[in-house]
Length: 151
Image (tube, rainbow, N blue to C red; front, top):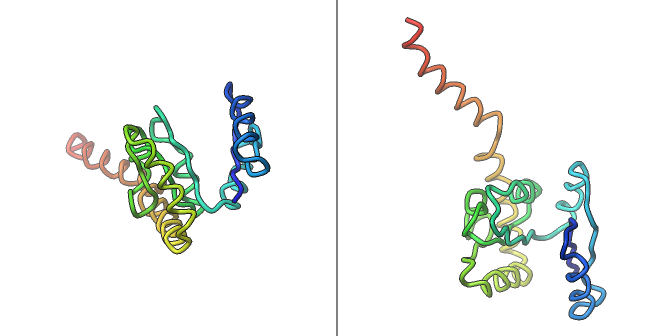
């Protein structure tokens, strides 16, 4: 098991210290990665876990799912807009924080479920979150609304 933490922030030093004490040699910190390189990290992973505390939609969930990763997150914020619980990932209530860890463990231990959810995640993003398709629907609706005004 390898844990890769991508990104940077004010608590990195604290996290690195905790990782060294509790999981020596298991946690790798990449620092900030350019957006154009992120797909390499998603594609190398088996699952994507990010609590998303106070996140809005959270594009990272869509990015991870599009690379075939099941997601573990809290449902209280934007993740529930992008992740379908028990289909494309596992969501937990922030009030039940331990469930977040249990969901990670569940996907680590159940390779079959992890692979199934990963495939579902990629399919879901392509079907539901396709920008061209969604903008096309909006464009059509606007056209329908404007049509009576033009006659």
